[in-house]
Length: 325
Image (cartoon, rainbow, N blue to C red):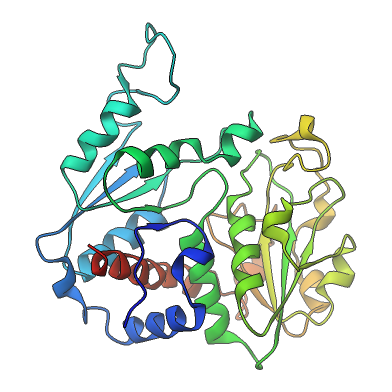
């Protein structure tokens, strides 16, 4: 019997991870096996932020499962939405989420939400204020297509990829910070750490400059190593990702760029420290800032298979939500 759920945000929501992984490979072998589940059902995908892989992979997964799909880009053609209660709406925002959300729920059976962190108010972001309003007021099952703090569909796809390419039963996986020209959320590294901690036969090491410590709820039992070279030694997988300062050690630094050290860029020398390690990144990636051309174009780069597995991770999640209707 499949594991069913009404919302999907964290790794705990998917139930036994071994069963979810088995289901992922089952679906990868036959992507249309469960298309009867979505007949006459509609998925609404709501984007508060830009997307390429999430938009395409989620829509493809829903179509594989026989669903109709509605895509709403809040910033292109929709009314500007107010998200705060108690605000006098005399500005450029014409509609409040508290009315918009239940209206959206009238037109669909499932809702996927993508809403990034504002990176100015840590408490607001880590409370997942926007996502929680959809869960509370839509009347529909809701799943995260990246939120202020997590990106579970990406992390699930990452785990599927690692399982496919692991050289041995036990894998050393390194999550490494890398420099960037813009302040980015912590959602991808948060979820990656959370899912790797939950996975069997994965030894997770997180490496980053001092002050970039992720929230302890996501770090879990991972080893934190501030020496990047030491962290890379013997690694089977290198997962590079930038994130802005999480504000754990100094709340005033939340969302800021407090380190621009280009020596953290993953290049051929960095990869030579590994155990013939595979390179991973969620994409899009700033070449020669996060990673050099020669590394991302090498035979050991998994960024394309990793992106392809987004369709599979999303298929498992939507399938289980349809089964719960």
